[in-house]
Length: 265
Image (cartoon, rainbow, N blue to C red; front, top):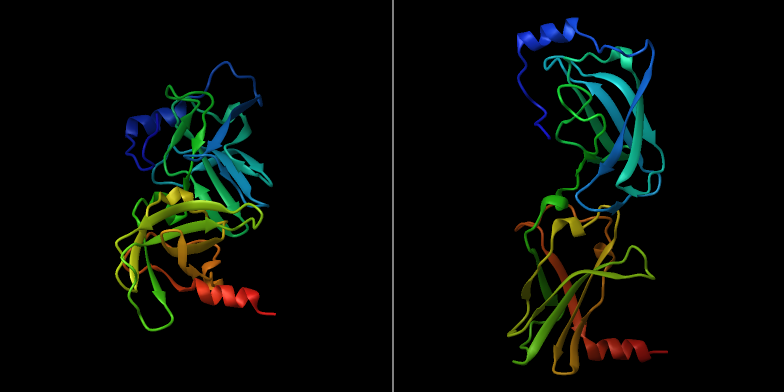
């Protein structure tokens, strides 16, 4: 069972913690706690990521926790990842409260961290436990549509009644393996600029990926306009949850102009 990090503690518990020790454990005997560090889904970690898991005594609510053991997994490539922490059983007191904490870092950046207590060892808690972490990337909790706007560099002009806008957000981190993150289609167009919304869940957006907006406007089988992706769209990660201040804005150009550019010597 998970509990919130902050919780009251009684004087009786404190007194028990100070006077009671685990029985039947040989002096200096090494115990171990193991499990997996998990996110809500499987995720790949950037090269050089470090997963750190600690066994902590969290009995005293108004004092810093005491570290009993640690496992550092260098160059972890994904979550979930396994861990094993060794500790001195002589330091474990039966009335005290112990928990596991975990974080994932890439250089100075904190990527994932647990936000709930994962109790182990005493007070009926299991001997081993997984540690569930949450992402520090705000997009991982976003489920709102991603708004955008398509316009033209030239003077706005009318569109044919049968025109349809097709928009795709592409993960271009690996140029050889472009992945469509989300897409939408909108018909019943009139004039530029054209407003649209891309449906998606925030966990599809990764801080480690690069993205590109693709779009075209068609009428039947004919392509009328294309987007030419700009460098500003090849960003490492989108900055925050969608709102009125964040719009995916790009220009489209007539397909005839692109054809002329492609045929130029």
